[in-house]
Image (cartoon, rainbow, N blue to C red; front, side, top):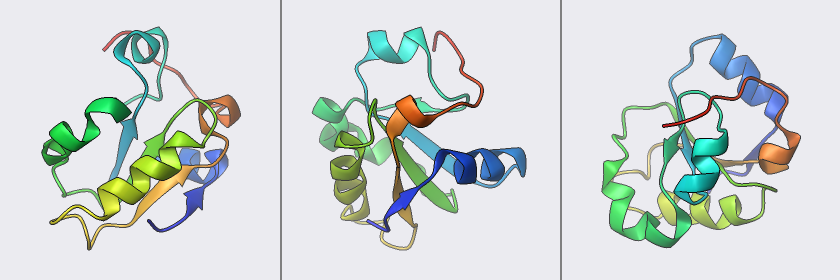
Length: 107
């Protein structure tokens, strides 16, 4: 894991159309209620089984959870996965609670 990223730094990357893969680790019902646009829902409880869904083409992977705690664990897990070692993996500091950017509903 390569640390944390602030909500404003993530918003800047998204505004600049940077190659960022956002992995929202919440359960599907929470994800459907609202998530950062472009996020992929890979629930923490199923992350190990679905980690191969990450394409590895992004310049950075950002994990997201409600408060920025569980996403740290998810970032460490993803960073340890073979094939991801070259891609920086960070957790969104303060999670969705600290996000004041756009939110999308549904999948």
